[in-house]
Image 1 (cartoon, rainbow, N blue to C red):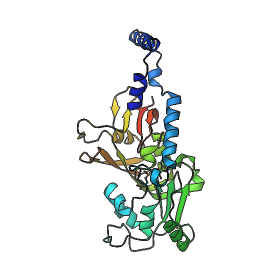
Image 2: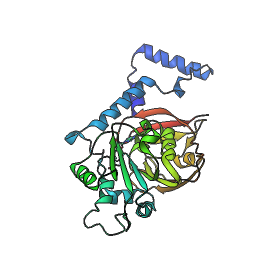
Image 3: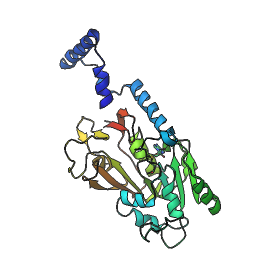
Image 4: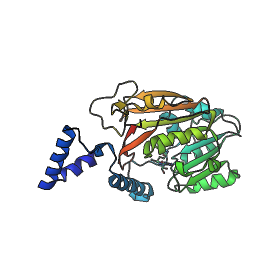
Length: 303
Ligand SMILES: C[S@@+](CC[C@H](N)C(=O)[O-])C[C@H]1O[C@@H](n2cnc3c(N)ncnc32)[C@H](O)[C@@H]1O
């Protein structure tokens, strides 16, 4: 990754070159330190704190690529087939969690359909609507959201901020029939396996998680040449692993992937159905993290 390259380029003293030479010789003799397998913690911490600053940017300072107000029509275009129908089928006692909701526009559109949206495009069924929870690290609620939530009353529309998904207890959140994530925690987290584990723990059996992951090796092998990957996974022995093949090793989960090789970045649209309660997600450890929107990440399967 770029930061790894730049830190190596910065080593311009003779002493640094000598140190590199010693490490190469030790590795060649099988006496390497093994450090290359471990993440450099101070650099990871620095990148993670840069990432925190991106979340907190406001107004004109928000980078153009950090979009926080996608509506329900965008969600229907970006998420796997079946999302709109699944949302439309929810009833008034069901619950929908949107992780990484930004301003919560998709949930707002669900309650107040966009003017001019054709029926079916707005994913809204004929009956009473599900209770919905928008979650964002940083607070981006709009006045319109507050007005609508107040007029509906109770907890029909809740907005949670100030924490990451992993920091909520099961009691604080409860269970959901439907969970979505559009360029939210799944694209941004530093702990991918813990994230998926938490999502599945919040789903009712029979419920589904709809998400997407940009800049990944595609299940259908149709990635174009010269791609800059954002999320790279590897197996315990260091061989490349695809996000879908990794997810498919999760117990009690039925995973479906739609590979989009003609998008700007190769993107996997992913649906994970929880089919029984004994979920176990193969653990991935973080090797590299580079702040961005979304960040660059490299993970390795633990033994
Ligand atoms: C680029 S915005 C996407 C917002 C919205 N989904 C959209 O498409 O407009 C990223 C969102 O993910 C949230 N996010 C990132 N990591 C998260 C995590 N681990 N838990 C909860 N929210 C997270 C951010 O706070 C922000 O709300």
